[in-house]
Length: 240
Image (cartoon, rainbow, N blue to C red):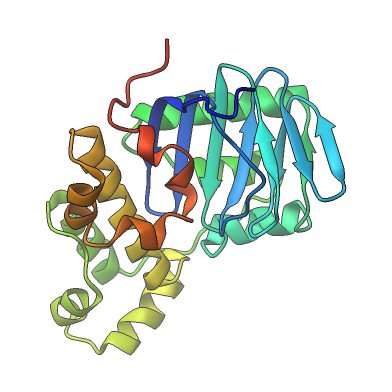
């Protein structure tokens, strides 16, 4: 692969996940605080112990690796602190795991549908695919209402504003949020800011403008899962 190759394709970021579908570009040895699943023709993963080929792989968070696949490549990144992420990490025993051809095909389908499906939950679908499914507890109605209002609003979600809306202390809201949503509020806020920044870039904003749109400097969050394709997301149409 040409070290200067660009990432080209479609990308979407959700509350605790991100997906990319298209032509994978420059990808050096790196690590990030996200579980990464990927599949594609000629898929290859390399770490400190060497390189392995196969239909696809799942790499745990914070493990140095290099992921390569030919077009069309399917990438899924998951916050390891969310409920699905914790189950996936346990299922793969916190180590790089090879996917079977059927699983790689299923992962590609998960990524493709998550690009356009407004109700997509690729993290949960991957957990189920890996045999790590678990029934989520019922969500507190107050948290559900707050999240629904957030998704309908153009304003970024802020912990202080959420605490005021629920008439609770920030510490109490943080505990309630973790119990009900399955991910720490800090992680959720980070992902929501990245999602807004991603949307801004797709709409033609510069990286700086998108950072303000998202409510957080991109360079501070550039190690988050969206890092691989963020700079290429100006035109999120699928690669040709």
